[in-house]
Length: 198
Image (cartoon, rainbow, N blue to C red):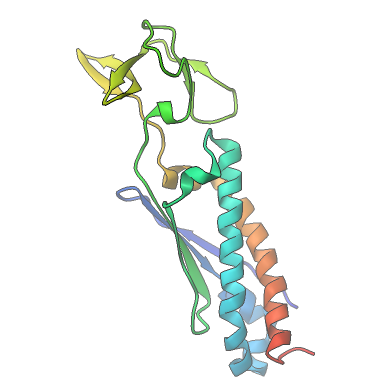
């Protein structure tokens, strides 16, 4: 089967939402089957795209969890898939979420309030925990949060949101490459299933 490029469009984050649109039209057109068997390929397109979209999600979550102090289960309820249907050549992954307190990631110490200057934390795994001299821990609504004194007012230290973490260029590139390979393989399988390929 002929190749082709996968077009990935990432909408700018607004209100903690990001859309990652996967457009497979160039790959499908490069295959040449739209001209040879348009009816049959229409039946094969959506299942192949949806399998690739699910794979894209899997890679995104796996790679994001490698780069940040988060677990894949932390994304539950934040990721939504807009499936391809009726032979549409694209599908969309939507990530929603607000910024979280840095104490949801990796910090030391975790619970007991500490004096200013002894707090360490990190959002990304690279480099490990780093001192945040102005920060300190304090009770907050039955939990403990990290703050800094900002001109006499306590300001809570926050982390990136799920959409911001998933927008990482390296992560998207890896997910795009892998899902393209899955799509090409799956499209060939679906074309054989509908009789467009021997």
